Length: 204
Image 1 (cartoon, rainbow, N blue to C red):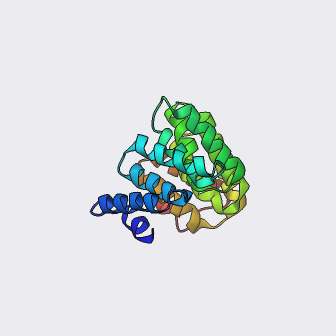
Image 2 (cartoon, rainbow, N blue to C red):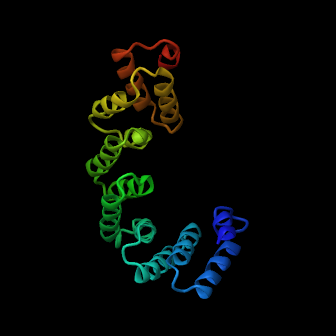
C-alpha cells in the first residue's frame, strides 16, 4: 500500500503503482482504502471512468466514506455529463468536512467549468471564513478576477493584519500566475490600510 501510494505521483513508476493497487484490491477486496488508492492512481493516469468505478467499489463497501466520495467527485467533475453529480458529492464532503481543501478546490473548479464564477467564489470565501489557516485560497479566488476583490482582501486582512511580508508573498504568487492586476489590487489595498514599506518598489 505504502509503495503504491509513494509511486503513483511519479510518471516513471505509475504503471507499477497501478499494478500494486490492483493487487491489493484482489487480496483485500472488502477494504475500501484499497479501492480508493486504485481510484487515485487511475485518476493520475487520466483514466477518469476507471477512477470513478474504483471509487464506486469503495462506496459500495462504505457508502459514507469521505475519501471515496471525494475521489469520485474529483473524477466526475472533469466531465460536463457528470459534473452535476460531482458537485453534489463534493458539497456533501464539505458539509461533513468543512476544512477539506481538496474538496473546496474541486468544487470551485466544477462551478468554474460550468461558468458559475459567483458560486466558485462563494466556495472560496466560505472556506477562508471558516478557518484562519485557509486564507491561502485567496490566490485561487483572485485568479477568477472577482468584481469585488475587497471582500476577500478584508477577510485576508482580518486574519493576517499588517504582516507586509505575507501580503507580498501572495502578490508574488499571483503575479507569477499571470494575475498581475489582482496582485496590484491586493497591494493597493494593503497600502491604503497599513502603508507599504519594503514592498513599495515591487508594488510600483
